[in-house]
Image (tube, rainbow, N blue to C red; front, side, top):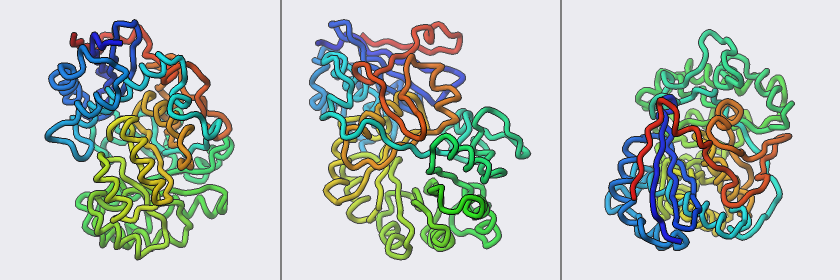
Length: 400
């Protein structure tokens, strides 16, 4: 099953998304994806990766993953690693299609039929125009108006009690919000004022006042804060009974993480911007993170995800897979979540899932009553819609 062509596709109105399709002489095509820096990732796929894998057997996934490892840019989720991740997912998709098996079965079989989700409270336009995870790229409606369907970021800022109630009506009892990002101190992260701290606590407090402990609350800090500020934030969140504090500091600062973990009763989670076994080993063993989080299409693909999950399992830790990017990422993550024993829940952003994921692929993982599963179909169980390449804003490139 020889790789004959590597194709990429990106769209002007979703400039952060990049899809890759790996074509074989057996007529099977594998689909992969990555997010952020679509142009640099596209260039790396065609200039560096395609010459490596063209003419190779697509079934030699571990061998090809090894060959695709970059000499520079091999740590963190830079363009080279994100490019590799997209291709690795496509190779696993081919393997599933060749075996006529869903990936969850190819990866060892199901440990569960479905898994609960938590909602990342982003709206459909969240960080959609650039790769900046900053308020001016949040895409939320202004003035507290609902705006687009499932404009959850605007809702958690202005109507958190209503948002929590709506999620629970859908069977979703865990949600993640990031009001601390809007604090003035988030610009440099060195400190947070008492006024900003109290304002950022309001959505959590309102949800608790309205719904008690029915909703599990997660706080996302996006790695914006110094240890000094993170200590203040964690202490303020402790009485709320937080499910976890995610990326409280920059996540390669394992000494800061370890000190924070020893200073708070609030569980710490994070790691979606890390890649490689070395960084995740340090995160777990030195940073004492309670729940490592990995992005499958940023941090090495399905091949790397299985190994990182094993690292976490060896330390009796759950692992979580990030999704706030694209439909292929969600599908790959869900297959892993259904096959691995140490996954507790799967992230979704309902603003993305119901907002635009189905605009690009023919099938999605099924979300119902707060649970997610893969209905069936070989490989990932999805393909890109064929007419995407005909769009005026489509940028298609093929290496043979």
